[in-house]
Image (cartoon, rainbow, N blue to C red; front, side, top):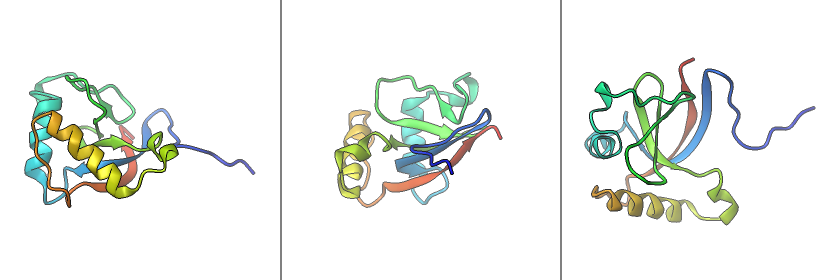
Length: 120
């Protein structure tokens, strides 16, 4: 039996685990604010780099994920798990990164989000 560690991907999609915002949540306004900072005029840009990840225009640990359009914005936590951070600490990290980009996030808003994104 094979046991996989980490997130698995194939040619058309990738698994993800982030702390951040979903474009499908009640916080759609904050999602849009962050999206405009990370990928200005994303609809007119060729910003999709494949495997569900969009190229962002600024230096940050925050990533934009989705299929045909951005669906999630957050900090990937796979490597941060080794630091034994709590969910509250991961939320604070996301809030600080968003604030550096000029977007204020309510401390109760960031969520642990996981799933699969891509072109599949």
